[in-house]
Image: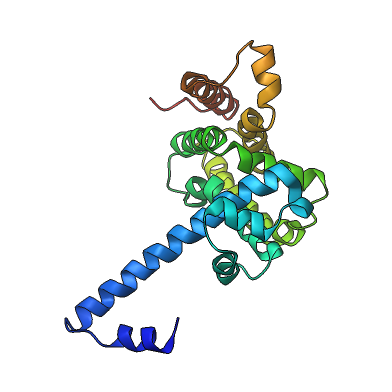
Length: 229
């Protein structure tokens, strides 16, 4: 931002209200551009891997100048890390908010259905994460040791409280999280295998609806719960 633009933003014919409005609009643009960059990054990294992807190509895919992309992310490594932060937050948001007083069946069903929906809407995200883990998590190792470990422990503690209260069968909460992650992401990571086995050219929405219904029913029954109506 130039000195003139800074000065302009501090003076307004309409007073503080207009100034606040300008800041709000700037915030929306910042969020929108950041999202465009991360979507482009997912596509570029999925096609060419971390080594093959370039900031220039990501900028072109996002429809932004390279200098703008570098304003948001100073280097490729920061962009790669931010991309995975967004992916993991998107996947786990609904289960992040669970509490001991919540209904176990409703909370688990919502988590499973959301994860299946993410496989439908963002298959590249799931494949990128799988590729990173298969390669030994060179960029995500610290995240796995800290944020993800803490997240799993926190969710496990809530599920253990449900078990201790007799509201859920005594299953291993950590293994249950692994099961939900793997079974729901399977529909994105192994889509070619699934389509070939089922003799289909592409997925349809009803395929994901059926998969979600199936997983909710089977997993919840294994936890001694009934599927929510």
